Length: 216
Image 1 (cartoon, helix red, strand yellow):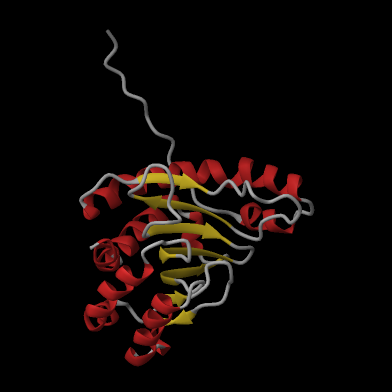
Image 2: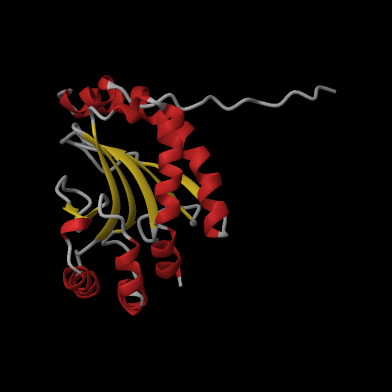
């Protein structure tokens, strides 16, 4: 009987070819590049992060890699992995994301518009809004639409504006709430697999109060 164990390939980081993927014309051509260049990295990175997030969340977590299956014409302008407690999907649940646009990498705690119990989740977040607001480092960013690049620096967001964003998430059907970090494609940490993985673990650990509060 062999005592050998399978060694999981280590995530080596993102490089210029990953970002250049989004300049490729055509849905099939771009999807092929996403599947060959980026998704294997997502699998390596996501499996490692799943274990760490599960430890801090106190529940089993599951990796989901965006398939862009609904697209029939326009190629995706970004791609991502998601980590959630639900095995079948992530969009209807509080979750964590790592993904790429053509010019940056994003890390999010995400509540997107598909979440069915927005009012209850928002109510819990609003009840703890002062502590949650104070927990966000100034160099983090917030977004209210996961399909857009733009974000708001946490350091520029007042406590009142933070509360308003949670109210809008509660009351507006398509409103979303995401908080996390952006890294420009030139940031050297992106090419250092171990350093990026450690930083991602630290980021998601710092966002765990949002996750726990949203989950109730």
